[in-house]
Length: 270
Image (cartoon, rainbow, N blue to C red):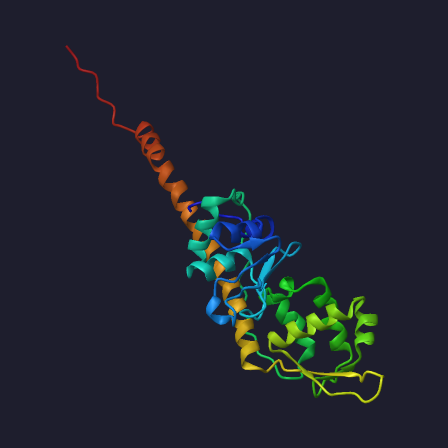
């Protein structure tokens, strides 16, 4: 893999459903049975993996706290590193290479650490580590609405489902519920569940838990994967340069021999 592969193309253009099928997962439409059957009570008789077509991501709702890309899926399934996963995909799908002169994203020296009430910087953190892009459109709308109605000191937000629907633009209570469950699985939100009296549903109470060790570990792992990808791209870039230099070396030797200045032999006299 001496050429510089376009990882952005791999993540966005190569169907994760086709990758899952090539790996041997039992896929039915945009659902699949999880291969980690020991984590499921019934051996995952009902498919627990869901794929998102627009984001080209997938997630097992039992095993995974957040979604993964097709590269992540190969690494998880085959227990391999990023280079091996990229080689595996390249061997089965058409993957373009970056053109000469394209720049690799510069690696940033940034380390995630948040307090429980640190709502102002969490979106920046999720964007930097790549988790924000893996959220659904509805989740990316609901989260800022929750931030807006949270107390900056305590991290506590109070807002009803109807309020979340109004301010996020999400029209389905089921979608709101699914997003909140996902945020809980990611360990940065705790839903304070209380039973209301009478027919009127109580205002929901939510507590941001950005200082949760599991959440910070997840962000750190996502950032590590992103840095590994950038490091691999730089490594491949260096290999490509070495390969070009090696292939041109014989030509340089020939040219240098032709242009070498030799001392002239004086003419011989009678």
